[in-house]
Length: 418
Image (cartoon, rainbow, N blue to C red; front, side):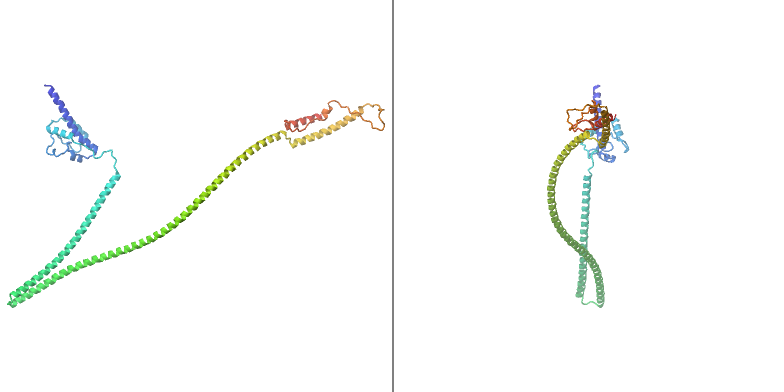
């Protein structure tokens, strides 16, 4: 006994879930496709059911009224929570709703193709203009047909009036031929009828004439307007012809100038190409000359480097062996002073030595005619070294400096003076 209610409850829950899903599915489609509430109601109805041909005669039994201001989320929640009795119609509706193929006409994430929309609008506008021109052409055709029909009607009225006049004349002639013995009053009556007929005919003729005059005036006016338009078109055509002739003349002159310019340009381009080739040759020759000059310049630079090194060596050697002029003059002055002092000292010493020398006997073996040779002077040891000092002597291969030689010369001079 407990198994059957449990099974029924599970089936009822499953059916309820199917029913809620079927009712929620259109709302999801509405939110996805961006429909308005009116479009949604036209498509599905206020209760969420699709309005098919079979559903129009079978209203839903469990539909609850809903205002247009309700929120879709609230509607979904209320429909899912509400406990409603299940019927055969709701089950059939759920089965049919499961078989409905839902397709989005346009996704909310799609990007509008403005070029396609513009082309579609342009095509629609062109079609509308074409229909408008076709309507104008049809209206003009209708006007032309109406004018032709009016002309035919006027001609028919004239023909009818002419036939009526002929009929009345024939009736009058018949009456006269059938009753030759009429009385005078009938003659008067006939005259009156004839006058009335003449007046009526004159009136009709006047009406027709006025209508014809109006039509002629209309035709004249139209012809005048057409003539004016023709003259205007002819003048415009003449102007266009003149403009075309001027344009052709300008085109001819432009072609002549173009051909001349093209010829000049071709010649100029040939000259420029030849000049460019000559310049390339000159440039190649100049580059070769520059390369040769660069080689010579490198050789000259090497020679200059070698000459600079030699010059530096000579400069070092000159700096090593060179004595300044002031030092030479100073040494000469010192030497002259020293020599004069030495001479005075030597004279003084000689005089002293001659005074101190003892008298020696004369040599008997010597001949009286020969002069007696004097004995060599006896000098003290060390005097020669002090009298003839080696100072200020330049030796080409010497390594001593000029300052050292000058200092040595000064020291020797000072020793001599002492």
